[in-house]
Image 1 (cartoon, helix red, strand yellow):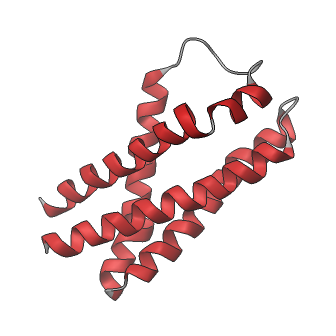
Image 2 (spheres, helix red, strand yellow):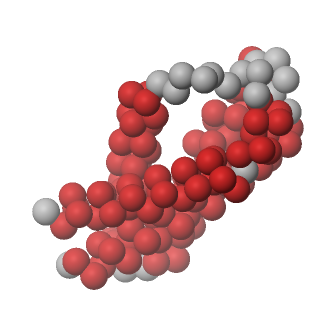
Length: 132
């Protein structure tokens, strides 16, 4: 039961940060560079599936190892590395296959992936630590 609570609360942190980033903080950054590629009709099912898979990945690759070592620093570092890896995969493949995918998007998005995953992993670890 603690794992489910940790997953749900980690998801809330991640999604709140991501929606704030995409919808408020960096909205004009992305729109100015990718507006011609963005859809008016968001496919929410795809977004939900991403969030479920990604949060499970955070739990498995960052939170669980940190719990085993008892170190929030492990959650932070593993989360950061996971975020860099995943977001780099997405952005660099897009850079190689899509027109007008700018290096500025690659750099900002990869750094965002590292930050959001590091923060979510650390918060998830702290939640799980308190619940155990």
